[in-house]
Length: 633
Image 1 (tube, rainbow, N blue to C red):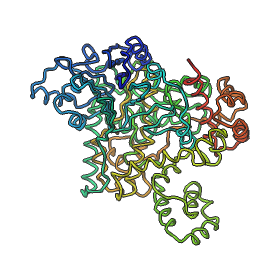
Image 2: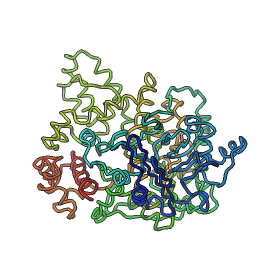
Image 3: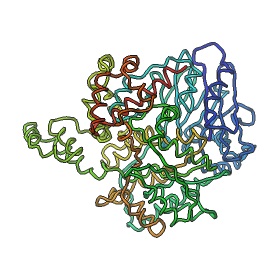
Image 4: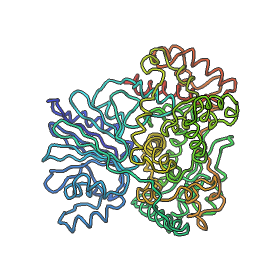
């Protein structure tokens, strides 16, 4: 696991500054404390920091082919690298290390861009310099597990694993992206290719860039079909899924350094740990986060699973005092999130490192793979929305006036919008399902200048761009379309981004075996009712774990990871950093929010209102982000 950074001249004639590249690379030290390397010519520079996991002794980067015409810097793990190596050696390629990195060099030579990518199994973000063509090939893995940021500025193209390195290397202006800000205030994060910084983008999952002759072209190299073509009996499907899950977990165990797993009280992580225990000769080291005095604490449930599975278990307790250092969390994740859930991840991975664990297996991805969220169980509501939207407007208005829909919560409000004739397209419904607060309240919190710049439908243009993701699944079952849309938006840009940033902040590699693309290809072709059955989410995963996973965890309903920030942010007095961020003077100076609207919302939250508490958190997080990434030198 590594951090990478680089620059390519497009039209700028000045030679690449090698010293500045080293400074930008040094900013990635936490992603790779075990070594560094760089390659610099007049028009190109690439550097990396290394966290040694495979071929600890020899796997140094940048890595080149025999004549030095192809060089690579790479972040990630290629789990099938040994198979690819044997194939390439049979074709005459000579290897000098046992590192998975070298497969990228020779694989590119042998198979080209698309041929290489279609063979890779793993998580990765890499850059290949082709000296003969004077071109750069950049790629990101299918599920977006490893990040890759890019920017064009002053006649140069920049790329890096983290935002801070591009800011250091390019000296580009630091300005908030106001359109992305509008999206952020609706859903609490920003989706690729956008970021919260103007001029800075992130490569979407399953995409690559080709840069040659001063031109940058983007290509998507992998999609899924959710047509239910697998008509096997349920027992055969469960066995097929179990075999593929076992294979994925086994491949993810590849490591020459200490390895463990995150363990909660839920089925995803417990299943991962249970299968690991059947494959390893030593007890699995497991780590759990708990919340002091909170009803959502799962530590006792996790301890029960750990005892039954015979793991070496460790618990990290998250307290309100932990939020005193929250700016460090913002600094690590580099983009603000509306809800501070990732604060728990930051301290969880810190504990992993303190216990000597360098690689941690995690359970992320199961909810998007098989349908594990509450809105999946309410999918009937989505179909009803579509039906209502096709009724005559007069009948819809009569339905809206009945008052019935208001009484059934979030799904009722979504149906109410349908009765009023509002859009019911899937991507827009999804945006409503993941909204962090009332739309009118979120818009009112913005300053008048920002409202004028982004308009009444703040962030809507980005949301409407999500519809492009649905092109490959159009006409297929809506449940599958929703799973695919989640896997292209919320999963990589919120869940996985937090996982990567906070694990690497402490030089820990997080591996989610449930995001193996072969597993996803198998599940996409399955009928919906094997994934979500009679209100039981992730039914297939639960069946596959029968007689392997502790029964209490296997049958327990999903409880999402939640930091009890609602009580913390409702305090009359917050830590100094938070009071400063929400101070009227600071709000005016930043210019993004209306100080009066923020003050009124805070008073309502302190009085006990919880409906829009996430919006107040979003303001606090963004204000803190500005102080860390824009105001700081």
